[in-house]
Length: 428
Image (cartoon, rainbow, N blue to C red):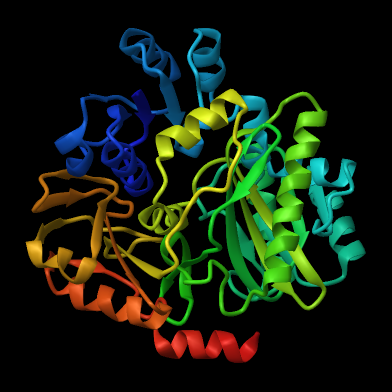
């Protein structure tokens, strides 16, 4: 097929490579000059992904058999609807359906309207008085969330990002001043995990569970980031998530899909749930409308199926079977600029071919340059991924590959380590 991919980060590099490996003719719209994508694309266009008019015009001229719009920011524009209005097949959600991610208020309200289990106490407030009243009702530690997209960096949790309720009120008040409203939720305690699934508007087929690590520094310290790395396990569960808990999470995603279909905006694309395994059961942290980053790279790196065929079935509402993933563990560690998450200081990186030894894979993210020398942006740069029989073994394979990348960067070596996994299993 001729496929148009929108996006040029690490997640899109993983999508691109699967499509290329299965013989598809891939054209790309992206804002950066991703060297991995450029090296194999049938054509590429440097354009801001959220400039939906420009991307639509490129798509109409390209006349692809299928379009996949990947970045969350692009999903929060009229792009997908305009592509479908132009008669193109699109394996991404309409703007109405993408609200499941782009509006946290909408997501919580949808779950409440349809009685979807896993919802948490929440309140959307628009004044300081409403905020104080809501916190009095909750009478517990809380989370402050902007209503729209934040790239994983706008959510702040009491006890982690602000020590007192008054500081949380100050942060929430600042959001209200800028955006008019803010979402307050109860603070949850437990292990978070991600379940991504292909959805064709009615049918939902899951991918292996994954866990993302958002904090910038080892031992889960420091500011939130877009994600410093992630893991999957060989049984497609996680060491601290049972099969019953995984199935319960999938049940919730299927209920979310059914709710959107019932309300007249069926979801076509990748439905991605962020869940927390709490003492009171599985709870919904958030629902997203695309492949996760970095977790999507993990699962795509072990996917044996033709992603192009699956996405076409997603677009056409004809998804009829479970995709195939290899039974191995994976660990991904992102190389990021020094100071990422607060005051990033991008620089250049040089890359030796030895990084690809021992079966490692290297995905290029928000960088420009060549395959052996890149210039970082203020975001994530390179994803080093390894697979093995266990998570700790895969983590060690990644670590051995890091010596082949040179420059001023930071990376979380503890992701998937034996000590980290021992602690997680002991506390489960």
